[in-house]
Length: 227
Image (cartoon, rainbow, N blue to C red; front, side, top):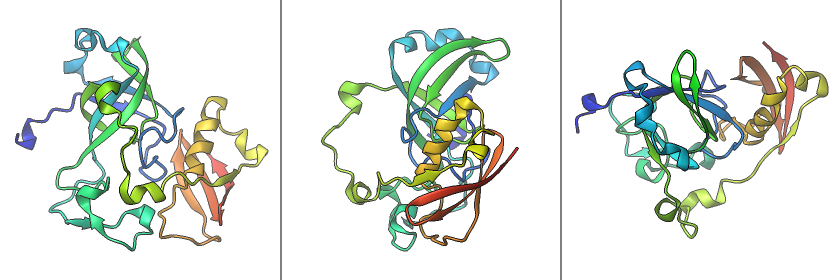
């Protein structure tokens, strides 16, 4: 199907207005909330009839920050230090022949918003604020789950977390309902893995705050926060 036939049916609202800091995979930060707002043409509650019976859904979305001309058969996965090339189809790199992402998220609630009509509240999303969504499908555990699946080179590179040092005077600046999510995001190490300078100050945007931090070994230290 020609790409021009793809229609944006919705956009997601999240706490990330830039891609730096967004979890590298869906489900890594389980309490990270998002709201799916349908485009006016698709704000028909009949289109969601029966969805309330599912606990998880698939999101098919546009890698809107990674649209480039042409493509490369190999990429440098950040989790491998950015120095080793792998085939693009053996990775989840955003730089692909077609800028399409796929995420499995938990469906927390279907509710009616006075401005946007019926919306979906989800958790565990790895999408920037405003990301266009092409499609939504129910997650079917009996066929979509593969407990014995192998993860290739990724099995040895995922799972390690940083210890987060978050001084109380800075932590209190973050709304209570956002603190746990922010700490979990930071523990995933937002930096590119080819950068390892303990004196460098990094910055990321989260929930309207500029979060400044540095990383020394396996410890991340929050240095400054401003609105």
